[in-house]
Length: 358
Image 1 (tube, rainbow, N blue to C red):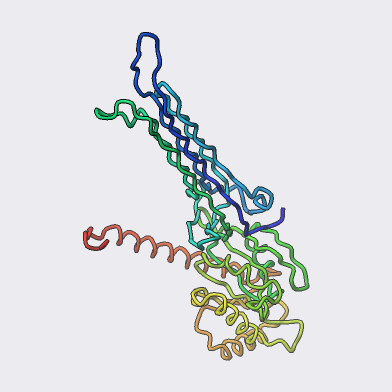
Image 2 (cartoon, one colour; image 1 turned 180 degrees about the vertical axis):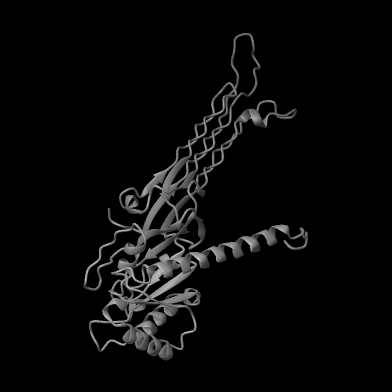
């Protein structure tokens, strides 16, 4: 199935049913009075997060979603039936934007999350509701209001703890296939990854994290070169970035330090906030060099970059060093989750301040 991470759809909530003007007419009851009932409310449109979906490809063919209109009111004080709501299933991680106003309507981050995107119209009022001591035979009634109509832009952003970043052929797909059950296409030529891949890395009982592998970024991506930066958005929700570097490039004229700088520049052009995300340097393909050469190239690279963060040397092809990297990632992510929980608990324990919302 083709991976599609953007789609446009139109949603139309149902109109409210009209109220009705009616008068009771029965034998031997000459003055029955008003008995027009109210209309029914129009159905609303909701988006429903479903973990069983992983692409927006279905919306390439199902672009219009319309809820049911409310039924009109009837005589004998009968209220019209409300229109049924509809639930449109979308993948977990979908961000919803109004195309006309560019309003960010919301995000669906967990299975079962619901998001109201178009509210149904309000029902009309029948003439029985207008009866009073001074108006015994009201003839007025109201029409139902129109349901909301919107043109929505759906954007799927993968949910992952760790994002893989690097030039094409740096070994991102090889790494995710080595440490998880994901099986992306792997070959000995660049540009093999065309769509993002997710892999779950398990390091023991109840200890796991999710890795996202995106297509390689090249210089000029922010101006549209290669696959551009259309897939960098899938790193927005990651806690940590792994920057893979080919330490033994086939072309000896390629400078690994310069490759790192190019990716950092593209990242900055795309999102300064993402560029500030914690980033670890991973030197790949050490199996092609002897230990002394690996150490020499490692030291030269770190010196040229003035790198201060964590550095790991691995071989995604043979698995060398990947175990150490995976356990370090798991320990770090668990610490981040614990810190987030402590921060959340402290916010929940703060005394309520009535002036805070002013």
